[in-house]
Image 1 (tube, rainbow, N blue to C red):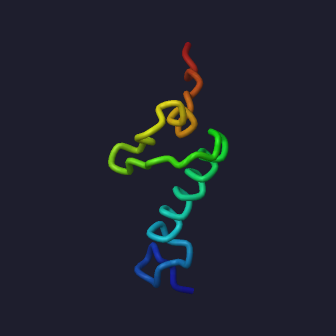
Image 2: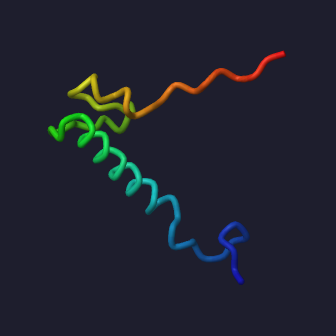
Length: 68
């Protein structure tokens, strides 16, 4: 069995394929959640350029870590 991590063939679900696909599906969900209007995606800055109200749906605040 050849493994990609050991120099074998690429897996069918490699990041070059699944990364852009996942991004498109998630952006579609943001558009639907925020009214279904057209959004302009700024991939360099990872934000929606024409609607600041939609940007909070892209990221969430992590809960505080534990402390002693």
